Length: 325
Ligand code: SAM
Ligand code: SF4
Image (cartoon, rainbow, N blue to C red; front, side):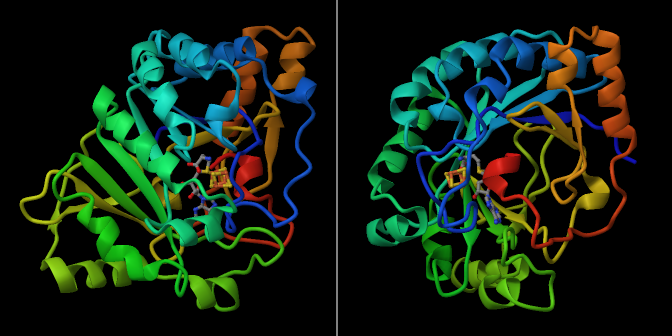
């Protein structure tokens, strides 16, 4: 099995958008504030994790930028010895004002999620008319050097698949990595391949690639620009500054190569996005456990990482916003 080198830390389950694929239409109940990990607790866990080989921290959520004083957390994590890469995934709505401070705090990069370049469609997918804010956020990130900026786009047939070429074009003149993600069927409509939501709205990464190549010609393989790259298969439109990534959990699952551990906002270690097995570390910390006992919990989570070969979805599966994407 691959060594675990990445901890995805979900700092909140709250969000200022309501993306259709990420949470149920009625929203989620939300974790009471007292149950959310405090920054000092997160920092302690990061220190323990680095001693076990974690080198990359990705802050996520919910929307990490809605958590108060997130820059303070970034600066403490970036200063931890052993962390090579500290990055953050955001919907970009609050990024314009925070980009400079995050960069100064030591953030290496951002990934911005954006599923449409068209105002009304963006509103339909996210429930908010805020595309302009996301675009300003991306500009701010590029301006302060949070590069390469990655853009995550979940491709949905009949919803935004006619924008694949427009999104790809963003990678031509600027150091932007556009990553097309296969939609995963979470929530009550969750079903495995072979029925339902994936069949209706899913678009395989290979089809995305064919559509890009029908306009720009054959894509070239590209190598990652960052240490400890993630699961995207990377390409480049010949002569372009940026990259195109295909993230294909449905058609080319990458479970066998997974090197990640997740920490939920309520302080549970989760060793697989698709399994609801979690190990609590918050209550251990709050009960006064020493670092050794917490380290044991990490070791158990790492050792028991599932060895399945493809994702599984069930109707009870938590939504992405709850787990931390
Ligand atoms: N709020 C931040 C954002 O939107 O970037 C961070 C959290 S979000 C859960 C992290 C990533 O998960 C986003 O890029 C989002 O598009 C992706 N995501 C959420 N639900 C998904 C689904 N059902 N299938 C594929 N990707 C999903
Ligand atoms: Fe919020 Fe990100 Fe989920 Fe959209 S994808 S609802 S922005 S957490």
